[in-house]
Length: 212
View 1: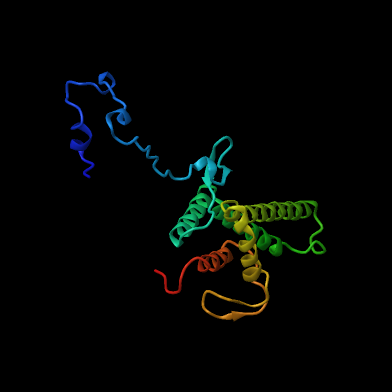
View 2: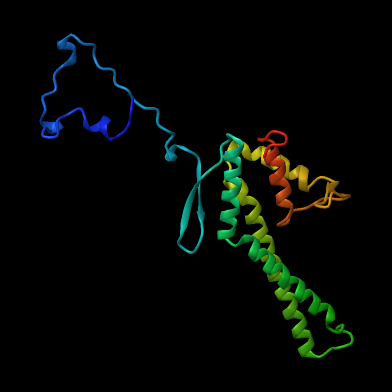
């Protein structure tokens, strides 16, 4: 059956309004009782697991959590994660505070030892630099924690356990592979780059070999 304009307008003459037309009872005319067809609707967003993310002082956005499905859905989930991380400037802030921390550590090393310079100004400067390093390290830790937890906040709760197991295997287990394909001893650890390895391992769970 065509779904063009003619299908929807040819049932009634143009001069007759539907609400003014008499509607008879089909059963009394010898026909079968009409069957009410209810189309299958997609699951309402309100019934899907979701999470609300605070973007600014008062701005918030609600995101549907990934609860499984096709590889395409998994890719969309990853895109949502990276887009949201960019909105929150998590990696940008992490890199900024890391650079600030490294710069202040270099300044601290460049200062003459306290034993060689006992002036009050030198002592005050040293304490000021140490304080800046402590603040930067705290911000690094907070941004990194929020970045890593964001991926799981966008996952449906039953899937978090599998994600946690992947993170443990990739980051907290001795021995890992670098981006150059070299084997290293020790643990990879958690930073802004190692999360990519966890995402790759997670994605392999829902994709087939050589999937493009």
